[in-house]
Amino acid sequence: MTTELMVDEAAQVRLWHRVSQFLFREARLLDEWRLLEWYDEMLTDDIRYSVPATDVRGETADALGLIDDDAARLRQRIEQLLNGEVWCENPRSRTNRMISNVELLTDRGTHLDVAANVIVYRFGHGRSDAYVGKYRFELVVEGESFRVRRRVVVLDHETLYEHGKLSIIL
View 1: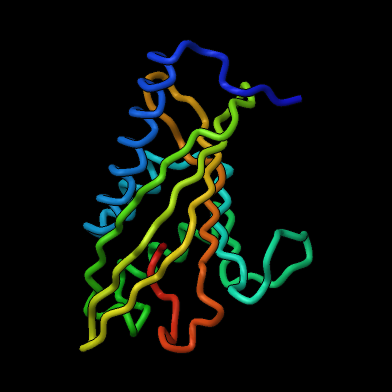
View 2 (view 1 turned 90 degrees about the horizontal axis):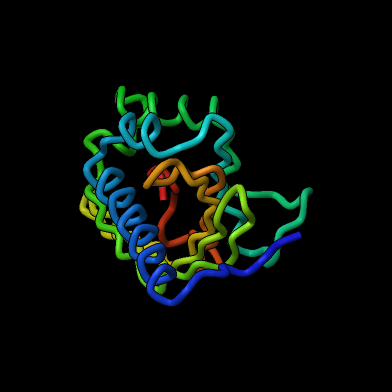
C-alpha cells in the first residue's frame, strides 16, 4: 500500500530540495567520470540500472531493453569504461547532463519514487549527441541523503540510429 507524501508544505519543499541536490550531485559525478565514487557512494547493493528499448512503450518483464544491469554488471561496465576497454570511450566522451522537472511521486515508506526529465549531451570523436528522456528513480532514504536502488532512463528517441551507440552511463 502506498501513501502520498503526508507532510506540511515547508517540509515537502525541503525534501524536494534535498532530492534535487542529490540528483544534481549524481549528474556531476557522472559528467566528471567519477564513476567509482558514484557507484560506491550513491547506489544500493541491489541497484538496478535499466534503459528500455526506444521502440517499446511501457514496462513489461519480457521486453527487450538496451541496458538492464544489476550491481555486478554495472560494476563491470564501470571498470571497462575506466580501464579503456570500451574503444568508443577512449578517449572519454565529455558529457553534460541537464536535469529538470524533478518530482516526488510517492513515499512508499522504504523509499521515494522520483521522476525527472533529462538531456544528456555527449561530445567526442568529432560528434555531438543529445539523449533526451525521463529518469525514474527509487531513492532509499539514508540519513540526510539517499541511495539509488532503481534507476530507469526512458529515452524519447524512436531509434538510436543517429547516435550509433550507447557507451556512456545515462
